[in-house]
Image 1 (cartoon, rainbow, N blue to C red):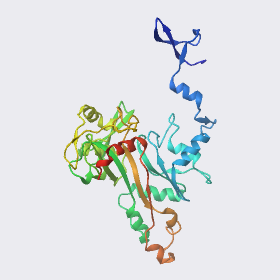
Image 2 (image 1 turned 90 degrees about the horizontal axis):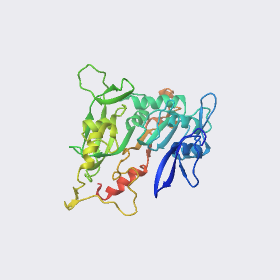
Image 3 (image 1 turned 135 degrees about the horizontal axis):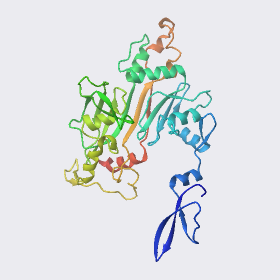
Image 4 (image 1 turned 90 degrees about the vertical axis):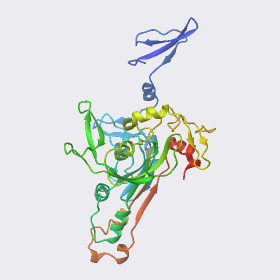
Length: 366
């Protein structure tokens, strides 16, 4: 306890009282010590060893955990199923980010670790793509930054690029007016707290602030239950917080657990009576807690739900298949390689809190 502050509980007059202790205080016999959780965690398991150069290395348990997240690995790419609340890109003092951990734990037989080519928000979960070589990183970054893919002499590559997409599942408060459509809403960034933080908003077309085009396809995949509905989102551009802002401000249906862009709607939603109507019988229906399901894990029924946004599906060209032909001349390419597109498709299961919410509403999904 030296150098750390804590609290001591003792019984006085039949009541338990908490007293903050100083390093030189003398404890009573039978007193119980309470220390902050952060201190306890540090004592139980030191997460990182730091060497003088500042490079951070995960321990053996973390390496094993990270490798379990890998869904696919070849000579050019890695695909992981990122859990929620793990930052993807970090700067000190944020050192337990996915890029830093992957560089240290997922290099396998390569001299350098994989590099990020697309990002997910810290609170989001799902498929995360990383490149393993300089060439594959360049091809993948081009795929996810260019809306209109340029033509190539290789038809199979062109077709595979056209098939590239990401699909997200999200639980939103309310339901969009239309069951499907394309959101065309440019985004701008505004600085808050004297430039210490920023917020993404819909551009006002005033020409006074820089704006980026942002397009998102969406479709509703379930009825409104408990004041919420499940939707599928397909971003056609890659902008920061694009899906969250499009859901909250363009559709008027913020994602459950998104308090940054849907705080006021969450406040109203929590005060709403939880009564909806069964899609088949039309009778009033109230979402109930099924036996054996713990809803206190960030699900839709918990007091403070976690963000319900998950990158569920990823389709992209098989870079390893095309790597040896992308730099070749058309006359050197075997005809069979230019006729059939070769794509990879991945589907990731949802995190626990979203699975619980899905199960609570699954009887009514279409």
